[in-house]
Amino acid sequence: MKYCTIIFLFILFSCGNKEDILLPKSDVTIVSDVLDHSPIYIFFRTKGKDTLAEVNRKNSIISTNWILNIDKRLPLRLVIPEVIKLQEKKRNEVAHKNELAENYYSYADSIGKNMAFLPFTKVYYKMGKPMYSFVVFFSKKNEIFVDGFSGSREELKHFLNSFKDKTKMIRFGFDEDMSYGTYIQNEILIQSLKIENKEEFVY
Image (cartoon, rainbow, N blue to C red; front, side):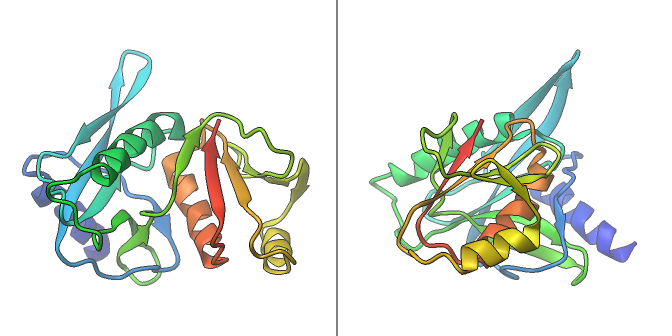
């Protein structure tokens, strides 16, 4: 209960109003602390039968590390276009640009009972299906397909760890209707494999 309260208060007081965000969860911490940061929030909204992503970045400072707090219920088709806009704004900044400033996603470590952060500064997203034959694809139901053939997470890890040509570009695809919460779990898996050359597509 204390753990849930900490997460809720973090969102409540950071926003400055009585709104909350349901953060994704994982059982591992990638980064435990981020100094000199600005919070950005993407809220889950509904309007009739439509789901909307509402961005609040009024407290962000371009020269700081950015922490994106995103509601896990939002689908990637709504989240990633907003993330792309934020990335481009920071990358294209000239006057106050800080080359050392990073971008992070926040999530909750359910084992360590703490806030955790996932860096994504170097991730370049593309909306649309890649025009390549070899793609690692994560479906809405969180199934994994490598070049069209289904496999388990352990099989994927073994395959990519044994990949002979480490310099070859690996392309990851994600179902646009996948929840952001599920995406974060998959992104943690991908980052654990320490793949240097990669692209991510949402379609």
